[in-house]
Length: 203
Image 1: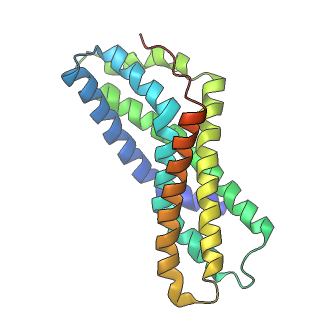
Image 2 (image 1 turned 180 degrees about the vertical axis):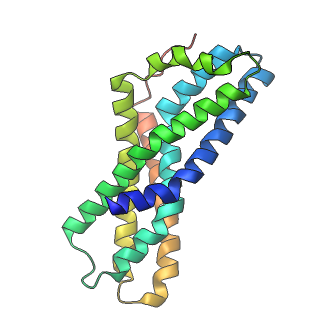
């Protein structure tokens, strides 16, 4: 629990800032440039977050904030880490990503609503709560958890490789970060090809 709390505190501020910027940017794009109504734009933002954006963004944020510490922890272990510790590392990363998702989605939707020019913009969010169905939330949670767990596995393996060579730790951290980003992007592309997202109609 301490591990999860520490990583959540490290990554939450960045997640909120990026989500707010993304929400405002997408709403301005849809409303100002494409002349879409505010309600439809917010619905499109929610659909995009639940089906594509949020799990990938949360995983990338976890990598940027937590990957260096994960590699260092695996490298400092005297025996290089056991299978149980590897599973624990993956599970805690998945839990951290799961806890980040509500903050990311909430910050993006709140910023998007405030970016609209309609009166009482927060009231526009109430009808969108119907999109947060249990199947949709389970899908987005599992999606983000799998990506974060895969990233944690890469960090763990890279840390084990340099446990006897402390001078290689910066290189291992850089390699783990790049490899984790490439792996989750590849997984996203593969899943999108094999199992296209079932995006509901908007409007």
